[in-house]
Image (cartoon, rainbow, N blue to C red; front, side):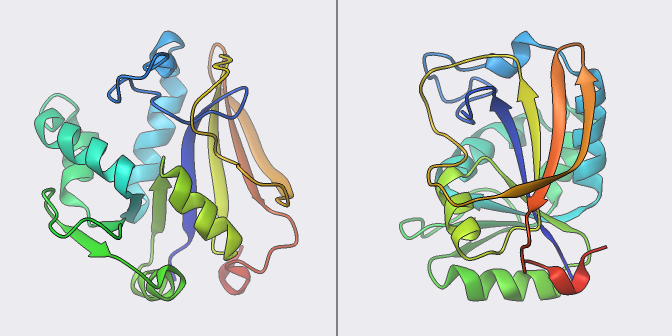
Length: 197
């Protein structure tokens, strides 16, 4: 059974918006100011161990616009991003432009349960702040993989927008001179309890 894994580039003040700069926000591209070579390798290994990506509409639109054109320049990572199945959660999207994309427009908990049953590898949820909040409220998240960058942005989309989430640290390591990888699981959570370990 697949495990739902939230994977984020995140600032010290909890912002996940526009780490790569493609959204054109005031502070966009902040992750590139701090190289993280071990983090790049972690991201490749993470993608290799995943069966599908689950995306919110905004993240999907950004990825669908960028990744098809970057396949050759990004090697194995780009090839896997484009070839792997993607599931986008949207109430407004009616047609998917990126290959291997399925749209779900409602019943997120039930659709995620079906997706988990079909997968052996991880189900990655990058970005997608609104979707992550929905998944968190429904106790569907197995793990949070946070690549923490030494920047304070002050504003932008935050990963956690509501109180009530206690987490346990299961791993931490340096993945660049100033960048940490922190892996958390919900404390005392029932999410994926039957397949934990």
